[in-house]
Structures are given as structure tokens and as C-alpha cells.
Image (cartoon, rainbow, N blue to C red; front, side):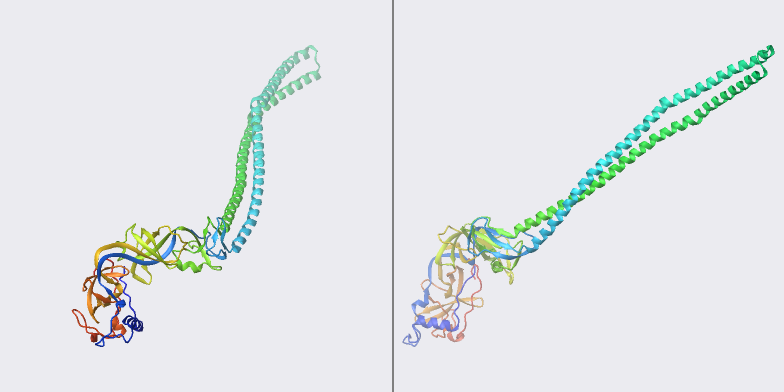
Length: 514
């Protein structure tokens, strides 16, 4: 808390002094000014309430701060009138949607194209599956035929052909034996006259034919067993292997073809889904370009805790996430936010009584209590050494309608001294680190050094230098150009500082003694 000493400068002090002195003609018999009672105060002993006094601003305890949710920043194109009472879902702010709507239209056209491609890819995928299945079935059938032909040859055609060849050879050998037996009898029959020479020759030729038939039948069996049968068997086994390779190739090709078509479907589907996601996001962003009231309330521009942003909320300005455009305060419960100097923050406790005065409501005071004390100091950007803590005062229910952001002054009652010698704070002056008061002595005054105690916004305790009942001036008579000073204990002569201006007292924390 700062010790406040009121200083009236130059001609203003002279005017006040002349008024309190009763005008130029109000002089005593010795020619000294007559000191009017209204210009003095009496040092008295009584309880002294100590308060931390600071100015701040009013805010609703419960307030909805509405900020843009869209990405980036947007220009305000329409704005509800500040102070208007709105209902739930009523439009409060409209942002420029032109660019966003263009993007939505372009992406909608892309989506139509991608959906068409997806349908085409799906149809090609189904066709490929059917063609691949048919190719595999055909290869499976061909392999099955090859297997059956091999089995047929191994179990039927081959053995049958071998039996035929062997039977033909046996028949040829049998016929050759009979032909030889007949030919062996030819000489005897020729001798007996049963056969002619021509018939003898015919029998020889028949025997030779049978010999040749035996040779042919044996050779045919040998060739079949050596070449034909192995070649035919190998050919049919090779046909099976070819069928197996064809089936494997058909299956792989079918799988590749299906997977290629499936990949095209997935790619097309991915484009559709990503485009749908982009479109949904932009449409959601488009919805964010209109801010509606989530509940009924009274419109306030910006955030009351950021009064410097209030005038930035207007049509044409660009705002984005993190910027409060509209606040809907609940005016039933109000609070005051103040900044308390670090020298005073230890004096402030939760639930301490506070007195609130408002610029908007003249002549009234309101009750409140300390409801929150900041734990981290704030530095003044203009004076980093000046550190303060935010303190929240919750006001008791009131019967007047207040508005967020209006100026309020708070006095927090931190202590009450049960008995203290005290004078008004504007009866004490300072020069450098020294404090003094002008004590009335008859029709004159005495400048006297004083030692200060605790103070509040109105009076200050005097630890040394004054006695109860002594009267002190409420102004610096030297500033008014008045004489009449007497030397006293610890006082200065009037000539030592004629017309010297008193300087304001330094800040003194409540409860300290300078």
C-alpha cells in the first residue's frame, strides 16, 4: 500500500489557503494571518483501520469468452451491437467466408471426380477377379487333363500297346515255325512227286516272308520298348509339368492382376476419403466463421481482462484463435481484479473484507471478499522493477446492474490498530526521506519532523513528533506564500525555505514505520 500525500501546487494552494484564512483582511493584531479551523485537523487517538487500496476493473465471476475456432485469422464482416441482450443460438459475429467457400467448391468438384474414379476402379477390380478366376480354372482343367492322359497311358494305352507288340512278335514267330516245318517237308514231297518245282519255290518264299515278319515284329517291339514308349511317357509327364507351371503362372498372374486392381481401388478410395476429410474440415471451419450465442446474455466486446483489445473488435479487423471477440458475462455475480504491489501482498489474505467503489455508481460502496490471490508476480512492461500480484475480489449480491470492464476501486481491510495517534494523510509532507507536519501554535505554525506508522487511504499513524490534541495544517503554508512560522523544537525558520515546494512522500508499505 502506498502512503498517499496530497500536494496542491502554486496558485491553487494560495487560493485554498486564502479561503481557509478568510481572505486577505483576516489578520491578527500583530499582522499575522488568522488560521481558520477548517484548514486544520486535530491529532487524535482512536482505532485505525489499515487497508490496501488499489484500482482495477469489474468482471463477471462467470463469463463465457467466445473466440474464433477456425485456423488462421479472418476479417469480421458483421458484428452484433455491444450491450445487446441476446438469446441462445443467436448470431453474434460473422467472418469473411469468401475464400473458404471457394476452397469448399473446388474440393467438392475434386470429390465428384475421385468418387467416379473409385467406382470405375471397383468395377475393374471385380472384372479382374472374374477373369483371374477363369484363367486359373482353365489352367487347373488343363493340368487335370494332362494328369489323366499320363495315367491313361501308364495304366491303359502303354500296356495295351506293349501287349499288342509282343502278341504280334509271338504270332510272327509261330507262323515262322509252321512255315519252316512245311518247308522242311518240301524236299520229301518233291521227291514223292506231290509238289512241283514251282510249289517248292513258293514254299521257300513263304518261309522267307515269315522270317522277315519275325524280324519286323521283334524289331517293332524293340523300337517301341526302347523309344516309343519312353518318349510317349516322357511327353505326357512333361505335359503334366507344363500344366503345373501354367497353373502356377496363372495363379500368380491372377493374384498380381487382382492386387493391382485392388491397389487402384484402395488408392482411389484413399483419395476420396482424404478429400471427404478435407471437405468436412473446411465445412466445419465454415461453421466456425459464424459465432453464435451458446446461452442468453448481454454482449461485451473482447475480454474484460484485456481492455486494450476492446476497440480492436470491429468490422474489418482480422481476428483468430486466442482472440476473445465476444464475452457473455453472468452479471448476477461480479468480481473486481486489482494488482497489489509486492510490498503489500503478504498483508492480503483470503476472505478479507473489501469495500468497492465504482465509477459507474457514484455515492455508493459495495461489500466484497478476497477470493483469490495470485502466486506469480507480474512485471510492469514500462517498469520491470514494479512487480504486482493479481488479486480477485468477489462482490456480495447487489441490486444494480453493472457492466464488465468498468473501473472499480477496492480497499481491502487488512488490519485494525486498536489505538493509534493519527492525522489526515494530507497533513504530512516530505522532503527527501524526512517527513514533517505544520503544527498550529496560536496564530502561527511550526514545521515539525514526524515519524510515521501505518496508514490507510485517508489517515496515517504518527509514531513520534505529535501529541494528542495538537492541531496541524492541511496544507503547506509556504506554497501559499504565507509567513507566521515560529521556530520550534525540530522546526525550521520561515526564511530557511521560503516558498519551498513539498515533495510527495515515498511509497510506504502498510504496517511499516519509515
